[in-house]
Length: 407
Image (cartoon, rainbow, N blue to C red; front, side, top):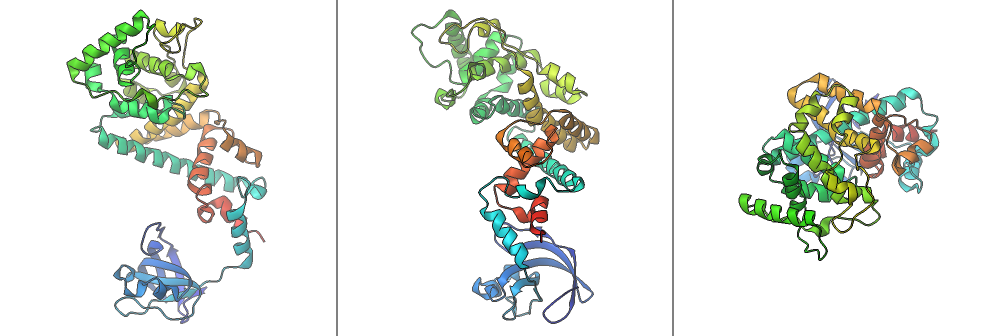
């Protein structure tokens, strides 16, 4: 049993929430000290006298600390009002100290690779499931933040998020900037005309600003149409074309091609978000995302020269990435918004039905002995890498915990 330095028994009912900002280390802890329930904050130091060195004895923000934990208790500590703070001396075993140093200074990724293949399946499954939910909730918060900037217009926010993911990493920021430049209400008035949708899309992307000496007729018509629409709707200035990146991109991923695909999708599906939310199978989602371009783009990758003719559809791998990064998070977020558990369950089902993503992060985990078979696994491991491994936050990681408890 834990006891204070004065011998009173301590029972931890709830350790509270870690605080990464200024103030006590843990908020809203629940403890029983000598049989009395206390609710408040907990402060942790290596040496008890750090309480004074850090000025907590003069800071009223620490008056609600109900327990001070230290490895070495070398003095009593007091609140700003003079009241003593109960203290708990808690030693750190040498094995834990050593293993923690190993995790922090490991040069290989993941740092806990040596134990991963031997972990019980229940521990792996429960941690990956928790990480999957954590990632869902994080993406849902990002969607809600976008909604606040778009007057709670779900269709607009869905298209902006979809556009970002059409950048497939390299041009993600540029596509999001572009989508935020789109005058959706104005485009809606011309949505039945694919040519005018393309004029809006390419014009606001800054890709019609250049005066090409050998411009073809289609480019000149788009330029003329966009100038007319720009004047008619008093549009804001297009984004600078210099934001688009082409280096090391395959031609099929050029911004021109992706914009043409988005224009065709916007033209064909008048209520895309609603249609996606109503789709009960992945096959139905993939059918909605099976889009190509207008005929001009079958012979072009940009406005500068003609290429060999071929249809430029969004491929199966791209459809899967769009489902993982756009469709599924929106199903989950909209399910929370509507208090509709069926939508949240559908999001989980879709994620578990898709193959795992293939990138260097996932290959590291798989190579270390973790089974990675579905997109639910890969999304959980991306969350683990971003929120725990990169931050060296091994103490909150269940794999890190298992590493620390080795003998």
